[in-house]
Length: 111
Image 1 (tube, one colour):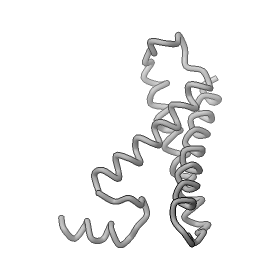
Image 2 (image 1 turned 90 degrees about the vertical axis):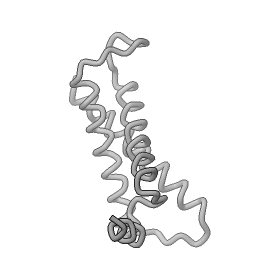
Image 3 (image 1 turned 45 degrees about the vertical axis):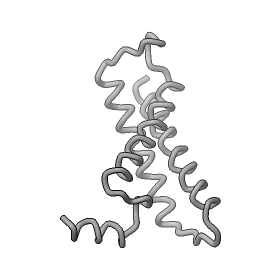
Image 4 (image 1 turned 60 degrees about the vertical axis):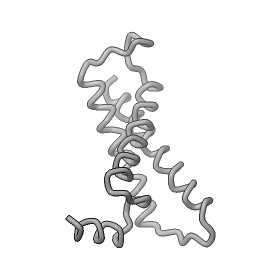
């Protein structure tokens, strides 16, 4: 049962990664498709979704609207966890792109 929850959480994270990349592709003209960036981002999003789901399920947190966490809720947790981590990263580093080396180098030099 826990394996199903973790897979659903990872699936939610993967969907979040796909949605973010699709939004990026459609928002800008002539965006080059980078397979390594694509699979890296989707993989990281899936891992974050899995990790957040594992943390919530493992904590024994009781949700006010459900007696147990099922796969649908785990999927939503994975999606929301990936979204939260991505936006936290953007706020802290003031960097709209997660893998923008230029911005990361500029930020690290200012420390």
